[in-house]
Amino acid sequence: MSLSTTTLFLCLALALTNAAPVNHDAAVDDASLPDRCDGIGFDAITPDENGTFFFFRGSHLWKGFRGPAQLSNESFQQLDDIHNIGHVDAAFRMHNLTHNDHMYFFVDDKVFSYYGYALEKGYPKDIQQDFPGVPSHLDAAVECPKGECMADSVLFFKGHDVHVYDITTMTVKTKTWSHLPVCTSALRWLEHYYCFHGNNFTRFHPVLGQVSGGVYPKDARDYFMKCPNHGHGGHHTFLNCSDIKIDAITTDDAGKSYIFAGTNYMRVDTRREGLHDFPIARSWKEVTNGVDAVFSYSDNMYLIKDDQVYIYNAVPQYTLIEGYPKTLKEELDIEGHVDAAFVCPNDDTVHIIIGGTIRAIDLSATPRVVTHEWTLPFSHIDAALCNAEGINLFKGATYYHYESPMTLATSRIAPKPQHVNPAMMGCKK
Image 1 (spheres, rainbow, N blue to C red):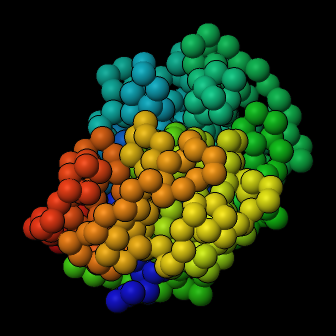
Image 2: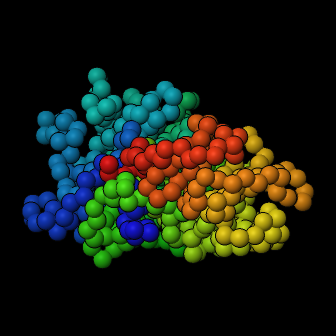
Image 3: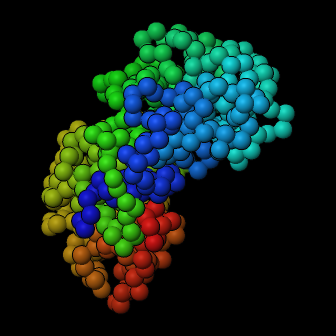
């Protein structure tokens, strides 16, 4: 790659969270501003409707993963002395159908509702008016949609008690999770739930409260912010679209899209949640050295590296199917270095690109064999993706677009390459 994988993913994340790159040391030279990296922690955390995170402490907030603190009332004008705001106790974004993209802030016994950064008419209100049964002086709050919780809900934290508010029935059930730290803020991100306490966080199950997904607590400065000597701390710049290069890309059956580059991956369908890169081994723990190609089929994800095929069942989380990895020859009846692969929606055929050839394999057949083979008008493709709009074959910072596998197979002249754009990758044009 022309630039490091870490730089690529960090720049994508910064671009899509509107967090302009700044010199961190210069940002905190003003002693009057709080420093998010000092280990004190946050009073509240919430994303806005675009997935930009707001981290609150006292009368200040930080917008995005890096950058200087600013007064909260610069973004939310009514959080000011007139309303006797000292600090935000809890905050969350609710974006179900009846409360689309509202941001709620809780201060003492009051709730403020914002829509499009404007305080809604009639607010602030007593918490009981909007959320009957929910106590005042909260520690944290987070939305939990149906499917992750039993119903569309909000989890309100106070001490070790969790008050589960059902949005539809407007009723509350209280649980005690004494095994969790007292949460000073909470966050839902990429279908996972995080309890923040001091400069640490603990991931938990939103229904059972069980600690899940690894050894906790972990330092938030390694994951949720950019701090010197922590995680991805340091000085980075936006990556130009002309420098983009990926290894693989796919969309699974649940509609989640992934980009792979080097040893990391990123969810690219989550602009509303904010973006971040993770090691591939975080979700596909047997694969540590990157992938050559990837495709999804029938609730399974196929990761190809060298001559090995790893198949993971996607439900409920990616789990390697017993007996894998297998060789390309065993699984797909092919040999050679795979450059890219794709499966189109509602199709049983995977198309494998090796050098200047493309091969079609019927995934519904047993055993699997190559049914067709064509010559491409180019070679050295990096990645491929097929969706409702057609097929994109990525080659460095450009891509070739085809309407269907048939037009790709019958084309003898390469179409004019198009440039990867900010809407696709979050890069700088």
